[in-house]
Length: 273
Image (cartoon, rainbow, N blue to C red; front, side, top):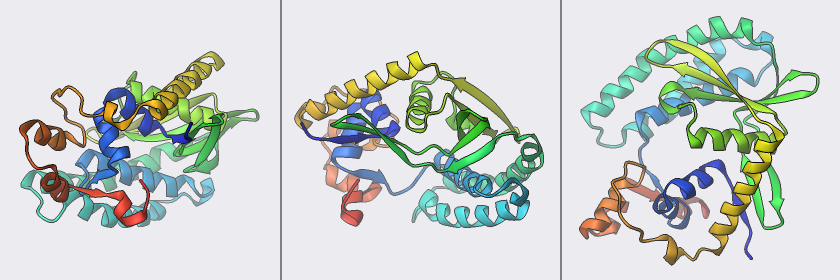
């Protein structure tokens, strides 16, 4: 049997839609542009990674402003593309206008209340579930809440956080497994209301064992399912990253034209997806 390294995103795509898994991990396609909510989430994560990557006494508004400028400059052309639609421009303008104020509010209110110690930010960690199946996760941060207790600390914007969502549970469990943590603190920034709050998901040993078994089962399923059994599948209306491809195939449109217009192949640039 081949070997595979699973990530929370891979697992979630396989469970939710094998077509989506096929486009991303068999065809290695990613969109040329990112949606405004996704761009917003990426910027927030990068800024707070820089913020929590230094000792508490060095966390400053200047640090936020510097990283925000760099992240925004990098994200803007990817979010808007070469020919942005008016709606995209309007959404991006709102991000540029509101996000600095939101992060400034966060610095003023969150920093005095943080009682944990940050052990590692963007903690890329991998564990072996079986000799053939490994699990990789990159928590935004791992924090120590007391002498013997580690927690995962994840930054989310409200539009991309839905309590009880399977993808959130899956990400939380995977991050806890790779970091020996007992739960996840979700650090949620609400864009529309200019506020933040935190939600805690605790994980029992029973739950984590359950998820480990699930991940192993999914990994074995991926390894033993030939690509021609993944795809094509019965078409359902879809709004994921690849809905144009699914619609084009159903309508008999040349997929190469859609790919060249909307996607890039990660193998073309880096030799890996």
